[in-house]
Image 1 (tube, one colour):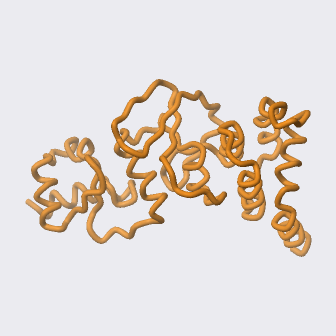
Image 2 (cartoon, one colour):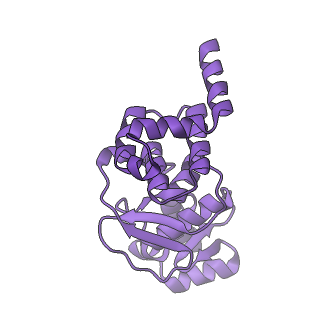
Length: 216
């Protein structure tokens, strides 16, 4: 019985970084009591209320693991999208201290989970992407969201440079469009000018990227 139960949970966890929720377990007939027993035996590790990880599953970076746990604890649906610093962490750009996990949804979401921040935001389909199985703002939308959230522009500049260097800032035209409504408050005439300013702030990293591109 224990073997078949673990197999059921393993099938679910395989697509969720080795993690499973009480709600997902209930769907395959595994009770909370059984989850508690498996945790006591060491077959599961309790990560947060209602979220477990299969024993032996390699952990990711702590910040990314935390974002994943929070997303699962909130229901783990595609309509809940990582945003701001959390999206930057998933894309591995920027250099912010880990903080609250940030998500956007089209409707109001309330939660008692510590370290989680949600806000209402309707995103265009082209501005969302799955990063290792988690819905997130695209790199371009993430950068615009960081600017909109009044993050330090020098840190946003670093994120832009890293995205360019890694070749994951794929749609500069879209980024300029997203920055257009934010340009005036940054005392720039357009999104294009704001992007140029952000790019100039980390010239060494951008220059290294350009030199590498020219040599290939």
